[in-house]
Length: 481
Ligand code: G6P
Image 1 (cartoon, rainbow, N blue to C red):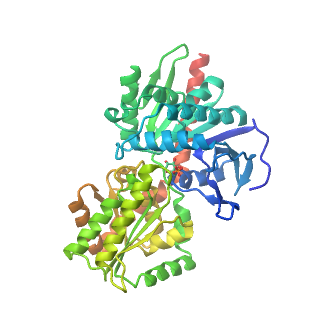
Image 2 (cartoon, protein in one colour):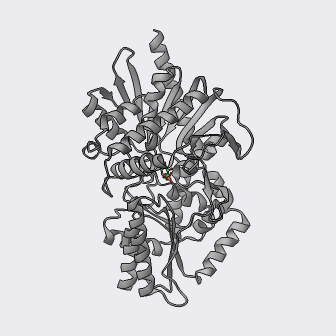
């Protein structure tokens, strides 16, 4: 942080997301510092932005911060301020207590409040205004995720010269669920301001097209949506499965210090035969309780022994002021305490639980130490943790147990796929994973590694931006014809 950014109105490429790659955090001593932001969106976009000479527009994670544009680790940053009330209504409220549960199959009940919606509209307009002020004529603006779904339409209204992309990092729900939303039509119209709307899975794009047909009656044909009006437009709605900077994970995994750290982790856990790992933001979509239940039952049944198998669960703190997240934390920590109380011995813990976020190096050491990776999300747009694990396992050992309700399951076909609601099925998959012969591990991991290494995040952004430029060019041709 520190260096002044280029004057506004000059960027040819802008990314907008609610959260910036760095969060301003204030410590107990009142001192503030910058911290790496959590979540899949930042993980994916950071390498893209470092390679592009654009600017990243977003919120620095604290209320009432009025910061000037700055540079962070080679990325131009344009901060957008939120008041304490906006953090409550737009971020914790509408984004994370209305849209988040609604878009994740109503795993938790969504709350609908009109003041939250009003705040969402207002903040979306602020993000749009920031982009309008920072973009050069004819610039490409790429809007990210569910917090900013109204921005594409706002941008188009003010700046028809812009090429506008949108990418939804989370699922788009089936119409029967989506139609609960009192503002369902406004959101669809907001998104249709984009030239290209990207989704994680083909099913998400299909759900969106159906919502457009039902609510607006527009014609859709495969990935094309025909938006009528004075200037008819074709909007593309299509899947672009997101990924990670795969090679950088493999490079870290090959470092001797990180391998030594993986050994140390194993030692620290008392050298169990098998280490199982879960890594998630502490979120009710991740199915952490289902995973713990399966593991606890396996210990109770005597199918697993605590002397042989340890589970490490990293649960990084997330959205801690939202009620559903507070409840979840209590529930998970109660369960972890019970299982450890019932089954741990003095020398072997059942679950090594960590309510922390860790730097990338430590995560890679954990992935290296883990014989079995457990991803049991009840619903997840993609789940990049699954891809990180695969990218790290350069010796082709290790087993990925993966929920079919993640976007990643469309691509990682050689994982052990599970339905997390089927506890017996999860238990069987865990036992199968632990017992899997090396040859079979290798066969499966090799196929998955090929997938993740050749479809990395650079590939994702190039695919999206190529589709975006193509769509915008053919629209311009049509406009001038
Ligand atoms: C998911 C969302 C992101 C979000 C991240 C962290 O990955 O798709 O948009 O930034 O979670 O959540 P938070 O609310 O802390 O930004």
